[in-house]
Amino acid sequence: MPAVYPKSATARVALACITAFALSTAVHAAERITLTNGFHLICDHRAVVSGPGGNRVRLYMDSGSDNFIEVSAAQIASAETVTLPSARPVVPQSAASSAAESSLTPVELHQLLANAGQAHDLDVDLLASVVREESAGHPRAVSHAGAQGLMQLMPSTAAQLGVTNAFAPRQNIRGGTAYLDALLHRYHDNLALALAAYNAGPAAVDRWHGIPPYHETQLYVARVIHEFNRRVAARKSRRLTQVAAAIH
Image (cartoon, rainbow, N blue to C red; front, side, top):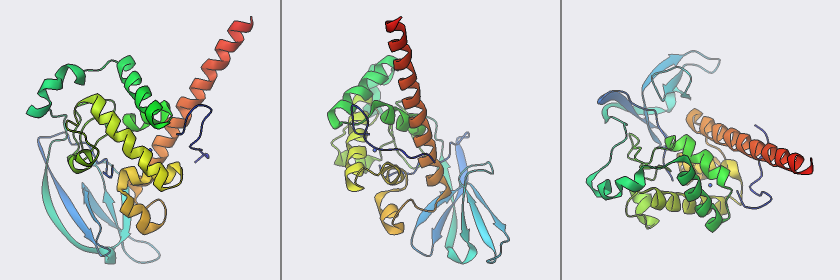
């Protein structure tokens, strides 16, 4: 992973929620796994694999075979089957009044992100990269765990941030950006740690003294940073093109 610094030429460049797998059916049978360290997670399915250290178990976050967390069989304390609701975007009654605001053009979304970034001195491309990973830009997105809106705020987190309607894009972005900013301060502007905490929660980052060894979280951090780097490189390229055009 290339080095990424939280400072840029113009701005500092950040929900304790897990962005989980998308569900395509109305309900979905999954497993709630409890590890011996007390950590809980929900997996789509699991498989036992052999290794030099004995049997290990891969806990798959979705129906595919690429997104998994691997643990030793001895680390699994218990498992129970759970039924999860659809993760299709949902708009509760409390959000109905914001239906007009919930329909955003790319320009409107960019402006909301730019305003929030300016308020917290965060790079707009960082915020855009998080939104892309969290909700793909859908204001009414709801995860299976209950995270809501563009920046996937859990209801308890939203309440702490003063967000009364997580489906209202302006409120959601304001709250998510404030939380991201707080995480960057907590981890001394270490972007990778702040993103890991955004995905898996600060408690997990503190417990492991770094990015937790969860495959999903590691992929999340890598994807957001890759997207952020891509956006910054494209922005610099556009500026160079504009300068060259102005000179000629």
